[in-house]
Length: 297
Image 1 (tube, rainbow, N blue to C red):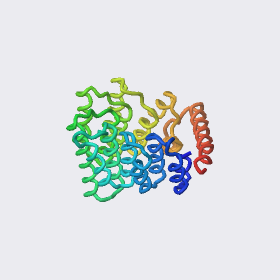
Image 2: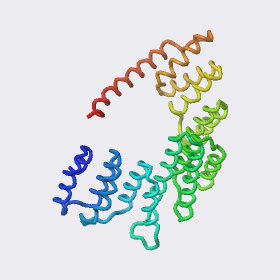
Image 3: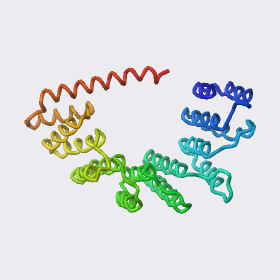
Image 4: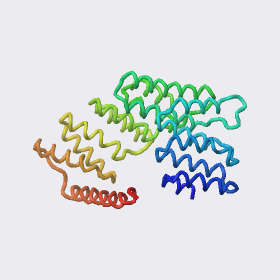
């Protein structure tokens, strides 16, 4: 009920319900409320719910701290979020942070760096993400593949490929196996700067090392880069390889390759394959249209 009221943004009714149900309210209940308020963009109310826990006779745990820190970072209130982290890191703190706490900071630092067009702001946010990563390691926490992926993706999108490769090599040394998300960050980077051969090598390395199987997210940037480089035959081959792997390309990618083949006078795609792709695209559109009315509610 508390989560329903939070989603409906009925805040007065939410606080009344929590006060009347003090005997039933637990720490997970308040955590879900904070998480929901943060997702709805009610950041001040999420922070207020965190500080009201004492009135409800609840004590925050690490999941509760992570929920309010995520809400604050989503709002860009990093100073307040770091204040909570400093409290968690105090010697003898009842609720010390975990690896996910630091991952939240790294994720939102990288996201915020991409939302600004100011180079100085980008450098600042990426520096803070790297600093938080080192702070995490210094405090004795082991980064997992999600932490590495968040930082590597942010570095690749801000064209700091040297540091991204350092982290990629560090993963192997520390026994943290990269996955498809890790490789896709490099594939998108090399495709964006028109070094598509390196992107292809990254995808082939992923398959050879058995770190994952390429999906449409892996093939799409490579195909687009090949079309921009006028390597139409190779783009066609990759599209065929993608379809044979059971993946339906995006409508834009499919039309891009077909138009490029027609303009270059090259052999087109087989009719059976074209029909299978078009049926898959239609099925995807119908699925999205069934979901959209639910999202409006």
